[in-house]
Image (cartoon, rainbow, N blue to C red; front, side):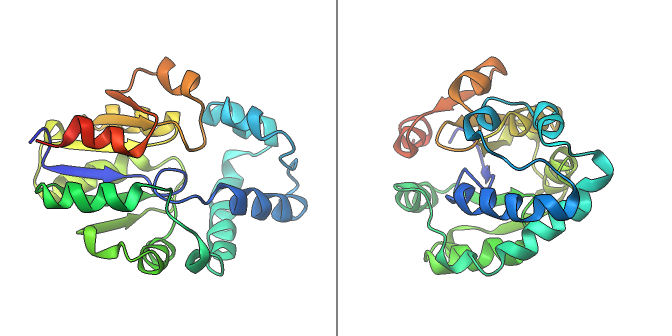
Length: 208
């Protein structure tokens, strides 16, 4: 097999949470003194730093904003669906012998609620929810230590530029999916190991 462990981002990669997240963000914007999101395409084309500037989000507000968003999401998670085709991909990768896990800035509780509602929790041996929006690199390195794997044995699948960057800094290959937050153009500019436009393309690449 190409890798021993495949790690996944959650929001925008496995689960179609973007519509709900946009509504939650705009509901919270007045409370945090932020600009609401009115142009979704502008968000999709923006790097993390650009996005923070566009919405008027300072770094010191990030922890409280993240926690508020995660808390608001709790009531939505049982209704959130995985992207079409994802369930079949997870089942087949598991059958091929790949270990699967999730590393996300969402909470473990939210992620597991969604997985359970989609009958998908059984495919994942670990679910890591970290609390700092810019802490993905550290979380990935912690998974390497926890699993006793080397970076070249692990693949991270995500939908944002920051996923590619964090994986690279952790010494892990990254596959970028184009059905989530960031556009194909922005993702390709950061040279992931693989660009994926449909879930089944992961099988074409990863199945033995």
